[in-house]
Image (cartoon, rainbow, N blue to C red; front, top):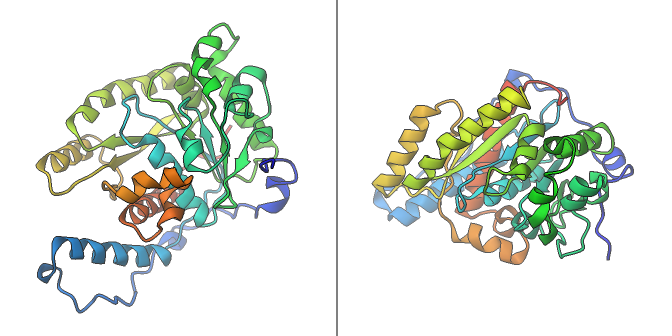
Length: 338
């Protein structure tokens, strides 16, 4: 069965128009809620019980919260050249959390491993029309995008194994750094004009695929694992973003840093979080993402944790992260993507 794609009759006709940019008052979240756990003292319970109570309180707060949609499409490259930091996991779960709250979201899987495609439940077997055809054959992005089966306002441009050689194949192409730039802007000018977010899941390297993502993006989101090695690659990644800003895309900024796999019981995790916050106080989000079995197992069901187990600690954490990203974008977004 052919998967639905983003066509002229899809985004253009089905999706609600993006609202006007909300005022500062509209982003204020009411804290007046009825707390079902108000009679429990956290100090009297076990650490696990306290964690479950805190998670449920946060989940209920998020259900009542406003997730403001941006006035213009936000194109965000999710990048970290170090593998295993939760890059793809963060991409798909933040995208799913925003889509679940009504945003129109596209995930572009630019990683040859295709893990984002797996988590979003879209076909990415060899031969499937994918981002490879977009980059190498000028295929319109709307023709290869597939709708996520679990969330009607979430789409994915899949990656197949063919993408593994794209870095080499693009070397001889004219304006090789701008292949994705042209494809994304064509989409946003046509059938994707009502998209609120475009997330680009970059490979764990600083090659041509990542460079293409940074040339088209206005924002970079960096997931950082709360372990020492994760800090070592951060400096190089920041230098790469600065180089792109200087030579290829003057509008790009590191807008968001997400602390992943956080375990507050360990001194190392707390120290790494403190170090990151001290150097990047404005970019680092308040909420962290803890280690979670539910987050890890969700892709085996072809789902994100947002739909797999919405009450889990991981789902609540990523929903909180998504709310922060949405609120920050309303306050700081530069304007319409050019």
